[in-house]
Length: 92
Image 1 (cartoon, helix red, strand yellow):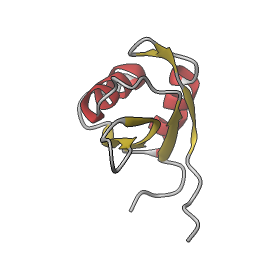
Image 2 (spheres, helix red, strand yellow):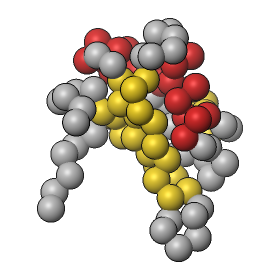
Image 3 (tube, helix red, strand yellow):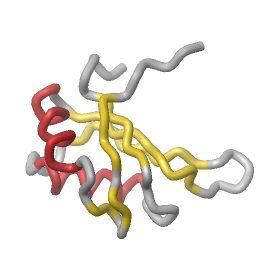
Image 4 (cartoon, one colour):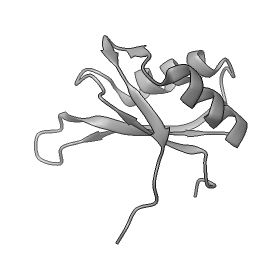
């Protein structure tokens, strides 16, 4: 499980964004290289398989997460300006 502050919500994703392209955009964006992103997931509709336009990225450290927010919020990812914020914990 990701520690507090390392899991980020990524909104306004292109429908063409994949888990891998999201991971690569954040690895390049934070400058941490391979291993800086421990998980990247684009959320898809369970029936159509199409992107729902948002996802989550987990960074290796809280410092990398802060850097990602500063550098990637409003950055262009696959032709869309994305919104980046700390993910809130899921309510059951």
